[in-house]
Length: 406
Image (cartoon, rainbow, N blue to C red; front, top):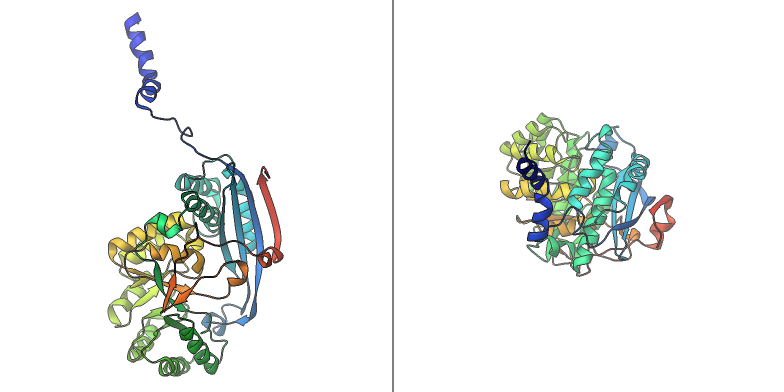
């Protein structure tokens, strides 16, 4: 090898460094403005005022819901900024989420919190042996949501504005007043209270073994609220295909905004058939835990309203991918539960979304969301715009901090 050949070879190995000096490029990490200094995770259990039942209880598949388990993540940086996020579980899985979060939380330390997508991938692969969907990604959802909260706070913007809002308020509907554990008189009373609170829609549960009872309850609520408020129903996956067609056609006279989860959550083909056969729009997706599962619903035209849940799909990072797929297909969106998070995401969605109002979670936070004229207003506070209350701290059963406490 001649000297000139050797020089050519060594200069090739130095090209990257020369280009970095000449063009101002930076090696990975050199552009970081801040680093994650500490992570605190907490497991808290929110007690409900009473036992809640939907069709899954009446068909014997689940027990009444009495509380909700939450995984909170609080991420603090060297510069003193803090982001808060949460995931949740109903009936089972909360302790599993917390255990998985404990294992992967140290992976966050020292990272640039602005690199949210890369951190999401890192956390997913840290626990990939137990899967890249389901409980594993639901555990990291709390971290991902906290990082997006922090990122918007650094910018001094509500998350909706950071993402690029289409609107400053979103049409909202209430679910917490329409469960099957409530008498029809109570459901009607709750529907009137919902309208008086400035909420634009009411969703009631159906899917009972005797469908005639469902039809009577829907008729009573429709008569009570009239045409001034939207009405939705939710069967919680308890119908088979023939029942869904039969009851779906009987429900068409009520001009419903949608029928939710008429079939098993994973029956994309069946939902597609219903969407073609029924005049009433079909909504589903809340039980799915990955982008791929939502992509199948969208590709098959199984939904008129997709209903992703950010904590369930792994956080805001994968939720944004679902939004992009839905926008491209011109599917409308009505995210499930977690209105403190989903309000911002719905505000940034192109195609006229809804957001679900649940008052169950309000004791967990110091702030309240405002409703008027059938819509929920995006708060002007930076980030997601909420902070954990003292009651949330009191309901905490386990907590651990990683990194420096400063």
